[in-house]
Every structure is written in structure tokens, then in C-alpha cells.
Image (cartoon, rainbow, N blue to C red; front, side):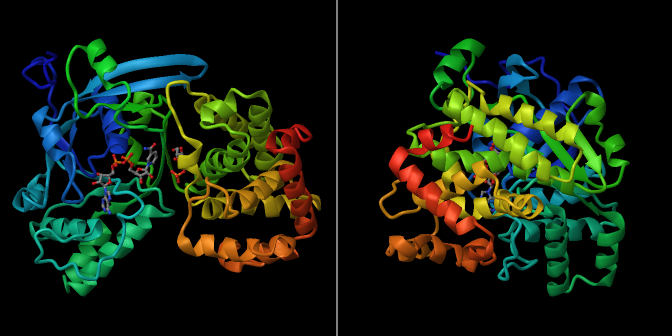
Amino acid sequence: MTTQLSRATHPDLPSFPERMIQFGEGNFMRAFVDWQLQQMNNQGLFNGSAVLVQPIEQGLSHLLAQQDNLYTVFLNGILNQQTVNDSEIITSVSRVINPYSQYEDYLALAENDELEFITSNTTEAGIAYNPDDRLSDAPPKSFPAKLTALLHKRFQLGKKGFVIIPCELIDRNGEKLHQIVKQYAQEWQLGDDFLQWLEAENTFCCSLVDRIVPGYPRDKAKELEAEIGYKDNVMVTAEPFLLWVIEGPEWISERLPFTKAGLNVVVTNDMTPYREQKVHILNGPHTAMVPLALLAGLETVEDVMNDDCFSSFVKQLMEDELIPMLNLPKEALHTYAEAVQERFKNPFIRHELTSISLNSISKFKTRLLPVLLRYQQENAELPKLMTLSFAALLLSYRGDRLERQDSPEVLAIFDQAWSNPASFISSILKEESLWGQDLSKVPHLSETLESNLAQLEELGSRVALQKLV
Ligand SMILES: NC(=O)c1ccc[n+]([C@@H]2O[C@H](COP(=O)([O-])OP(=O)(O)OC[C@H]3O[C@@H](n4cnc5c(N)ncnc54)[C@H](O)[C@@H]3O)[C@@H](O)[C@H]2O)c1
Ligand SMILES: O=P(O)(O)OC[C@@H](O)[C@@H](O)[C@H](O)[C@H](O)CO
């Protein structure tokens, strides 16, 4: 029987003082932030660990504790045309506090002068205001309320503040977290001195994260354990690529020397271009490929990239329709687009198209529609590939299509519009609740979508696409 990973099985592994508090013990944070702390420690550049705080009552704290907070990260994929298949035991997590059973330990973190940084990833739902939270709760329910309680304790002790870098995938995450903390400070009447300390002593940064982390390799765990020679219940698989853009003062790069350690971390005073790049060049093609590829019977992103017709679609979409419309340095965009195509080809990751298709209408609205409209305005014609993908998306939301996964409100709007196929395009384009504007006014969009829809139904998506790529 294989022994479970622990400090007893690996007595020579190093330990580091706690320098970071991290809200979230999930797969992403452990393969992204903690993996990066490990790389800095390996090079003697940080000498620190993260103490993890479990944001909700149920979590992984007990599984990590059983392994003395050690776990393995497997990096599998292709980076700069090289195949990477690495594994490493991560020693940069000191412990996990569950504030639901260890609230005193949680608040005691305020006493430690060595703790300088706070990071978080509590999913898109985590940075939210909960009106029922009180300072006297042990713990308050929401992440921002828990954080406010900790910051208040720190202030009461007369200590310095923190550099706070949330990683949640919401726009302007740091500003939103900051704003909710201030809201609790006011509602809980924590006083002007606390508010002044909050502003003067703490630095809230916005950040953008990018690394595909499929998580625990359920289908391959036994095989991997045989390879590493020990049992690990919280192992994580991830792609080798990463990007972390932190919007904040330059001195962050010195206090957190990621770049010095060779990590792809950018500290900037404006992260907007990076967000534009990632949302339009990575998430945009993901969203565009899904309805066309599902109509053709493909299942994964890898299937798309191994198919000549569909991979040409992805490449041309990026090069001819997306990159020319982004107001960013073109060379960097082309390099990024090539890297994204390599990542999409990753043979070690099974990325299901149906998982990307969830809530495709809102994804289309933010990731593709702004570029489609810009293209139409600048060129006085529609981008052909994006418009065909839009038609496939509309078709994939017809009541008989199994792939549609969206909110009941969105599906009801489509069912109503599809109830009269002859007027479907004109009525769905008028739905401002879906698109934020009346798209029936966009020159030639209605008739192009009508014709694309007819082609998709008569010829199928592969043949319709072959006419364009
Ligand atoms: N996995 C990826 O490839 C990837 C890549 C980039 C970004 N992300 C983002 O990271 C987030 C976490 O992904 P993961 O793969 O680590 O998932 P996970 O399930 O392993 O971890 C989820 C974490 O979020 C916390 N959480 C869940 N619901 C919460 C809530 N309502 N309030 C506060 N905290 C909550 C959990 O306690 C846990 O720490 C996702 O929202 C995802 O959008 C994931
Ligand atoms: O996570 P979603 O569902 O919003 O989007 C699906 C993918 O585009 C997304 O998960 C990317 O793979 C990820 O954003 C890469 O960092």
C-alpha cells in the first residue's frame, strides 16, 4: 500500500515563516499563487509561506492537514513549443485555518508582524456584500466581512496594514473588495481613525489571473501516485503557462519578487490592456468555437485544435478579426495569440466544450460582441467568422438543442423568439436585455445572420466554415 504524503515521509522538506494570508484553499490558488511562492523560495528570493483561510464552512482544510499541508502540483502541457511534464511537492503552505471552527486563530493572524500580503480567490461569488454580517459574528459569512474583522483587529493592535491582491475573475476585483470593506467599516461604525488607517496603511490592488487548472486528476490519480511513490489526496494538475497582472505601485515587484524569479508576473499602473487581451484573444475564441464545433460533433478544445478546418477558424479569427480591432501593440498580441493556440492544443487537459458553453450568451456579449461591432464600424462590413459563430450560437439556443445551458430567463427569451422562426432573427436581435442594445440596427447583421443560419441548417457547420477558412 502506498504511504500518504506528509512531513514524516519527506523529512527533509523545508518550512518557511508565514508572510501571506490567502483566502481560498482551492485548486486554482494552490497551483497558481502557492506554486509561485514555491518558485521564489526555491531561488531564495522570498523565504515565506502562505497561511490559508477557508472562506466557507466546507472545504479542504482537513485533507491538507492530514498531509501536513504538503501537496503535489503536476504541470502538464506545452510551453514555448516544449513539452512540460513536471511534478513538485509544494512546501509554501504553512497551514489552513477554518474560521468556522478556529475563529480565534483566524483573528490572531492580526498579531503577526511578518504577515504582509493578503491574496484571495473565493470564486466570482465571493467578493459580495452580505447585509446580515456583523462584527460580532464568529465568523461573519462573507469574505469581505471576514477581511474587515481581521483588518479592524490589526488596526486596534496599532500595526501596519497589508498589500491586498484579490485574484477573483471579476472586473476591478481590488476596487470592489476595497469598496465593500469600507461599506462594512461604516455600517459597523468602526470609526474615522480606522477608515484613515485603512486608506493610509493598506494597498488594495486589482489583478488578472490566467492559468488553466483542471484540478484533482480523478481519472489518472492512481497512475500518478504509482509514478511519484506516495498517496496525495489533494494533488493538482495545471498547465505550465501562467500570467498574473497586478495593478499597483512599482514597489510590489520588490516586495514580491515574482519577476526576479522568472515568473510571468506583470506589475502595472493599468491592467486594462491585459484584461482586453485575455478576454478577447483567449476567452473570445473559446466562446466562438463552442457552438460551431458542437454542431459538428466535436467534444473538446483539443478536438478543435486537431481539426484542420476548426483550427484554421481559431487562427483566422484571432489574426483577421480580433487582433486588428484591439488597441494594443500588435506584436505582443500575435505572440499571445500563438501561445493561446499552443495552450488550446494541450493534449494533457480534457477541456470540454460543453463546460465552456455554460451561459454563452453573456460570454458572447462581453467577449465577442464589442469586437464585432468595432469591426463593423471600422470596416463597414461584418467580420465573417465571428458572424457565422454568432449564427451558430443563436441556432444552438433553439429549444431542440441539447447543448444550450443558460438561465431560465435567457432560455425563455429564446423560446419566445424561436416560436416564430420566420421572425426569429429580427426579434432576438431587438432583445436589449441580452445584448445591452438593439442589434437589429447594425447594418446588414439581420440578413447576414439569416443567410448564415440557413447555411448552417442546410450544409452543417463544417461545410459552412470551409467556405470561409
Ligand atoms: N481552474 C481554473 O482553470 C481557473 C483559472 C483561472 C481562474 N479560475 C477561477 O478560480 C475560481 C476557483 O477555481 P478553483 O478551480 O480553485 O475551484 P475550487 O472549487 O478548487 O476552489 C473554490 C474556492 O472558492 C471558495 N468558495 C466557493 N464558493 C464560495 C463562496 N460563495 N464564497 C467564498 N468562497 C467560496 C472555496 O472555499 C474554495 O476555496 C473560479 O471561480 C474560477 O473562475 C479558475
Ligand atoms: O471560466 P469560464 O466559464 O468563465 O470561461 C471558460 C474559459 O474560457 C476559461 O475557463 C479559461 O480557460 C480561463 O479563463 C483561463 O485562465
